[in-house]
Length: 93
Image 1 (cartoon, rainbow, N blue to C red):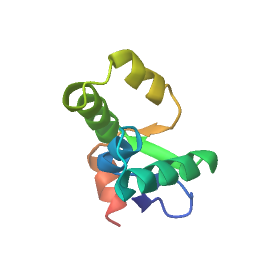
Image 2 (cartoon, rainbow, N blue to C red):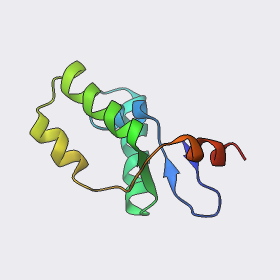
Image 3 (cartoon, rainbow, N blue to C red):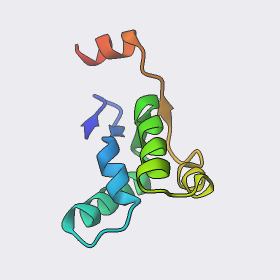
């Protein structure tokens, strides 16, 4: 997870979201669910277009979650940021 300086927004890795939205009894799933719930409640969670795409593909193909269910999970719940070369350069500063 990384936080954008000064804004309080937090980007999370695809794996955290996958663990949050798939079943599993282990601590990784619980921690991921707790983190996503906390960041969502604080209105801080945001996604990149890359993570959005990876999450969709992973949930629908690897975990065979129905497309409708994935769309409901996503449902415009979090802001999505376009990743482009300038974004990457700005993040490196």
